[in-house]
Length: 285
Image (cartoon, rainbow, N blue to C red; front, side, top):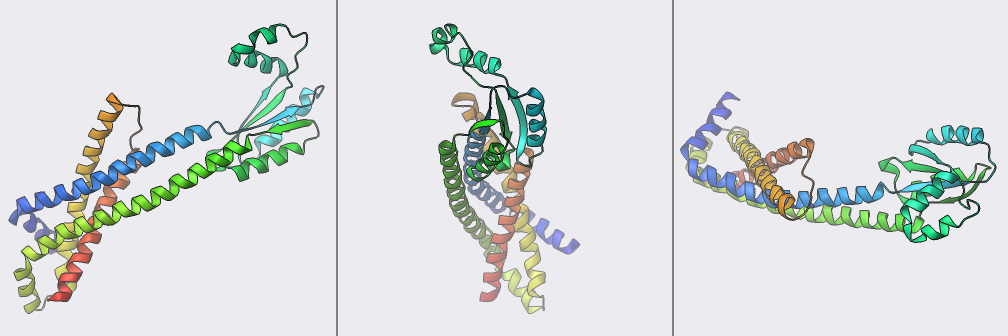
């Protein structure tokens, strides 16, 4: 292992400029991948923010004792899909309508009696904010004898699901394409390093070195270049995000875990590119 580390460090010292060019090339290929990742993260956040509005509202029949409602709310809170439950009295519903619908203020002021029913508002946990789970929760709410009606906006939730599926499919296809391009670019840069040292590889073969022994320094070199390229790409991505966030629109950046995963992905891509290139070269000599 120590010999492998020495060989890798020696390869960087022998050809600092080609190594720097390789890292820069890898960084820019990963930078493009990182920009796509930023777009995907922000699309995911936008869809998540819209999904936060998903709720199921159960309207309570007039005259229902508050004790029965409170007992039901405890049962509803125990549903595995439910994040929170809130009771909205008829007076609170009227106050909200007056506040949120100012165009009907004159109508609300002339009311002799409050026509709005009390309701139970149910918010779901993020993994369950889709049409299937929402409909299932709505069906369970209808089973309570005092529930007069249940509303949850099934049409727009179905459209949200469709948008979420499209975003996931496009993200998977485009992300795979960018990853493939990154592997090809990284493989090419590592292959240049392999060709630069082909005489050394031939000599090592002549003295009996195994393919594994020859391969290890190149794999470590590819991993190192990939990690360094990933770090540089992360810095470039942050710079691009800062410009967009400061001058165009508010955008989210990678979390710490996502950033670490991106750098690790650079190392994996560098390792994969090295594995492909050195394997192909060893088969040809």
